[in-house]
Image (tube, rainbow, N blue to C red):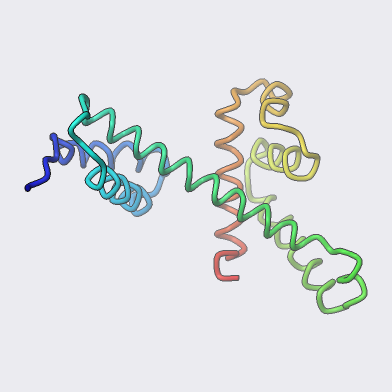
Length: 163
């Protein structure tokens, strides 16, 4: 039985354009759109009333999931970089942690002040995004965007994906 696409493909270029603007990276936008189309085509499409809205919401959900995974991974990597008691007794591990901390500091210095501030307040001082948003007079969504931008920058500059 042939599967219907309910007009999803006519929104492909729009989807790529929207996410290229949001991510400022066409390649990532294409990857995201591909994942969204795979998910949509694997799903039961018979109940979809608004294919365009459904496709954009699916894409947004995939992007949010991806950003959350990136944030968790970065937090784990930062936690590993904090020297514990056992690594203080191991000079090599301690030096690696110090070098990583220096690299993080240099990478943070390349970012705008709001990105650095959000990162420091959330990751080092443990403030919530809502607290930071209130403190900076921003929306919680904007605080999240600053954090995503900062984590992506750190990952790219420190090449943490290879470790």
